[in-house]
Length: 137
Image 1 (cartoon, rainbow, N blue to C red):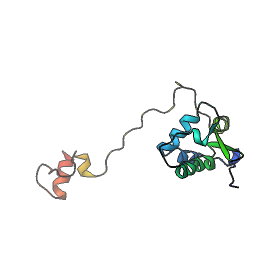
Image 2 (spheres, rainbow, N blue to C red):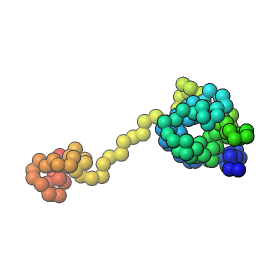
Image 3 (cartoon, rainbow, N blue to C red):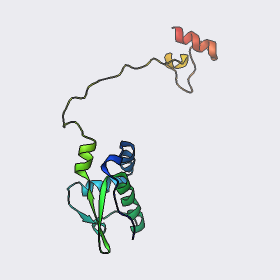
């Protein structure tokens, strides 16, 4: 019998969680499960083969996003919302985020400072000396 256990709460890491949400199919499964209802694997209408759906659910389960319960020959999946909310709390919607705009770093490349892009010729000719003259203007 396959192991359908989810990792303990303390082993759920943010990189694994974000990795488990990096595929559109995985996000779609999470969206379907976000209402809190337990769903059987057959109720998840994903546009993939059953073996591929099984892999997708395994990735989500091993990352700690979902929990799978087996009952006879059927498996049921739920979203571990309370665990994820407790482990990775988000600020309330509309809360101000500290920081703001970062200052833009100046380009170190003289051609970039001169506003040149690939395929353009600096005024005054080509070559490094002309680029440096254009940067000094």
